[in-house]
Image (cartoon, rainbow, N blue to C red; front, side):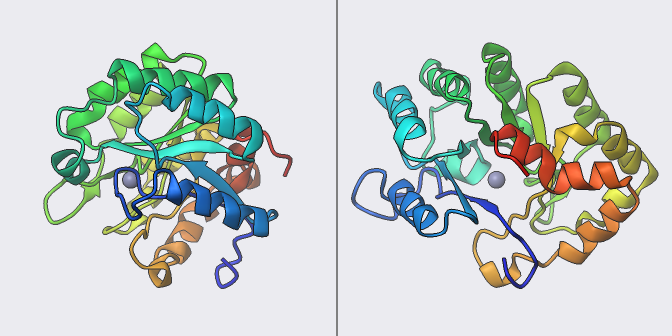
Length: 245
Ligand SMILES: [Zn+2]
C-alpha cells in the first residue's frame, strides 16, 4: 500500500478455503488486523458457511460489533472453487439470499465473483435482494476465457448498469492487462456511469504483484474527468461503505 500510494483498502479472506481448523478464523484475523490499523484496513467477512442457518445472524452480529464494512468476496460463482468446494451450491439458493438480505439490512455491500456460466444465478440473486448493494468483482474480465482470461463483452456490462441500480462494478484484473479499458467504448462507459465503477486490484497470491497493472489503471483513468477519476478510485467505494472521504 505504501509503495503504491494506497491510503485505505478493503481486506478479506478466501471464501471456501479452510486455511485454519477453527471456524471464522480468517474473518477474526482480518478484523483484529483492522483494529490495529483502523485508518487503513476495512475488513470484509466471508469465512463462514453461507448455508448455515445462523449465517444471517453472524453477518448481523459482526456488522454491529465488529467494525465490518462488507461481505465477500463470495466465490460460489468462481469456477475452480465451484468444482472443488461448492459443488451443488448456487449463488441464488435460499440461504445465501438470506445472507445477502441480512447484509443489506446492515448497510453492508456484498462483493461477489461470477464467471460467465454463473451470471444468470447472480442476476437472479440481485433481483431477489433489491435492498442490498452488490459489487460485481472483476466485471470487465472473463476469468475462464481461453489462456486465462479475456475482456468481457461491453454490451453485457452496459445492460447490467442499466438493469440494476444496486450493483457496482469492480474493475480489477488478474492475468490480462486492463489496457483495453482505454478504448473509446470503455472510456465512454466509465465516464457516463462513473458513479457505478470501483477501482480494485486482484493479485491474491502474491502481494508483490499487487501493483502490476497500477500504471495501466492510471493511464485508463487519466482520460476521464477529475470527478470520474476521484469517484472510481475512492469516492464510490467510500460512499457504499458509508465512510467520509
Ligand atoms: Zn474474484
